[in-house]
Length: 139
Image (cartoon, rainbow, N blue to C red):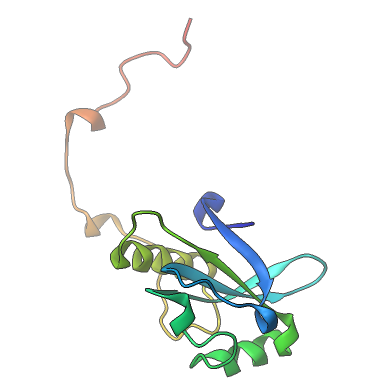
């Protein structure tokens, strides 16, 4: 198991060597990792699929040549995947975009900015946005 995401919130299966991996016939978010120094991995590609067996793993994927170049060889590549129980395609896409914003994987053509601006959501007030009315000390 490898944990990825903001505050390492997603428990991915793997990593498994991509060259010998047989993907499960499941809908999932997947990450392609390059083995770095020691036991460290770099996230170099993130995607999602309705069925991992149709993606073209290990090396028939449209971006696989970029993965091999980035990793310095096909034996430095690993795969990790996350099944989202009860999740829809939209859930998987949202998780993929979040991971792309966090890791900025070099082999993804699509890029997402992890910054946000206050004007994007505007001003608002609700009963739960008021100042804290109780003390911080429980005693």
